[in-house]
Length: 115
Image (cartoon, helix red, strand yellow):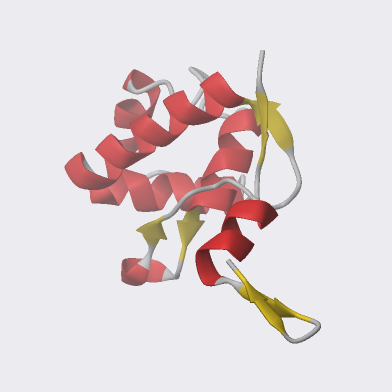
């Protein structure tokens, strides 16, 4: 099983991260209130979901039946959601590949430009 590295250095199974990220994309588009609530619950375990958002998250397997959040889900959410309040956005939770990043922008080493 392939593992991937999140921005915070956490290593997780790639399939789990991919599945969670796709569910987060759908949630952000379909139910932004639940999306915001999930992010807040990941930041603060004492946060209480508004209305039926907890049930919507359980249906998408983003929250456990007892209302808790798994460490895998928490890690992906905290690495994939940026911004505050109504300005939050979903971004890749993965740590950038240094080789791809350098190749994409080019770099200068000892006077020669690479990339």
